[in-house]
Image (cartoon, rainbow, N blue to C red):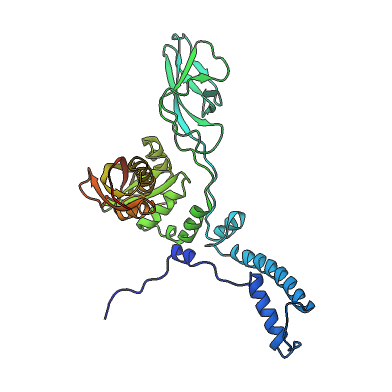
Length: 381
């Protein structure tokens, strides 16, 4: 007899199973109910119905109307359940678990303000000064001070609009004041990052479902993970490593890649020892580590080899994206071969991974496919 533990359903499994059905929602089901009542119920006429009878036409109309009411009732019921609620309804239900939708966040960067020549007195650039980089505008977070005799100073800046769009501006792309500043130039010295769209339903639903993991301050991994996910909707994966007692290393992966050291420092500050973690823990936050590798292999196909090669490599590239959104995955090639077999011209495929010591990545690592190169062999259909 197996001695394995009896496992409970996870939130993901309950969602996949579907919402409980509280109402009859199709006209065919209602029609069956009403006809059965008409023909057999003691309180009904108890006679056979035929298509041409006016009672049958009335039942058809009632079935349609009752089905619409049933659909509204079923949808209203779903909005009361955390695992199936959507939009504003989900916001209210999640609040019962002290979980609130993360607002959209603006991208940030660091600017360097430079004078054409040193001045004999201090130079001040006001907080809120607008600078631009292409179609994006940023404002300085605070007043910048260039002391007498100095040429430059640095100051943080935040995008004027929230969302992911302003992420990824490289050093030097923000390089102009919106209003002319004589004798002064500006340039961003860090890439822009941290912008995030408003948190989606799937993310807040899972955070709320596992909200009770945040309660413990004893330092469990899931508690740290949930605390970090609550920092920004731009964070898509978190790994928590305990290298030795009293020390916690947290690795963060963003929607658009690895965070900067500055972003990690802000996350560390967010994990305030007064309210979000045990005071005895020494917590460090790091960017997740990318592990690069290539995929090659042989595909047996029918039809045009050039077209099939292009389609297969594109499909495999898209499918491999799952490894860039998770930390510590096992790089199972079956996840790719399943996608490849959707190609109508594929007969068989054999894939090979190169550049990895182990296909089981460490908890703080994520996989990045740098190249996919397939050899095509055409066979008779």
